[in-house]
Image (cartoon, rainbow, N blue to C red):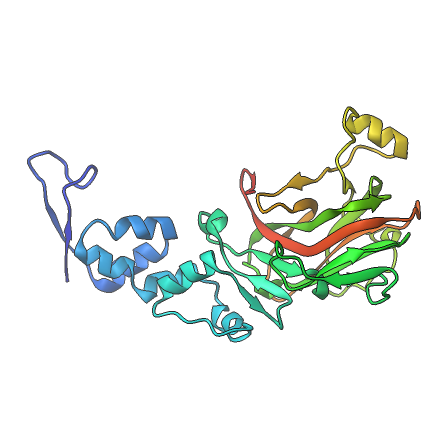
Length: 309
């Protein structure tokens, strides 16, 4: 098939040669475009009518979707309707789908189109929260600003422990990820300015742990110190840390959607059939705490120059 290339910059060797004609098979063009990126494919579609046909083809856009996208779509709470793989890709960018009875929000948004990888927010209901079913300690409520139907609100506990577990087959292989606890703090809160500990670890073949001290004993797992609230006005992180007799740790970031997030840790997904566990715990000071609102855990790919926020 004959593909006509326009005479724009980079398409001709001289101003007098405004049009190039290149003979390429449909399979060859599709193969080349499928090894670029969604952005490049969209740019290529503007070169000519021939390129537009190939750049918009299912053969190209299927390569930008995860290998298990059909399985994921089949687990959606509501039907996912699309007429082409390109439409499906941008459907997932604009409107992620809820899967597994609404426990996981799966999709790709504009932040990750450049990476061409996936984004996994998981709701609080799918997490393991100590005492979560005891009504005097936690309650489940709906918030209009949440992506999920229910969030967990802390009423009163002194033993705070949150864990999440994920199968890596839902993530891109040979990719680095970071996990974040997504939360807010209510108008009335108490005891949340403490240093807590977090970790992320592969649990393939390992026994489950009950205490963070067991995680700290594992040589290949790093335990981090974090804070749910930033230092008080006029107080430095160092001074806040000194009050708690701990080392400097991570502080939260305010997201564009109004929620806060704190990094739990990073991991590298080398294979597609493993399992990753992440945790957040404060079980040492045993101070009474209240006012914490948990939306869930986000897992996002890491760019070479850091995590894209």
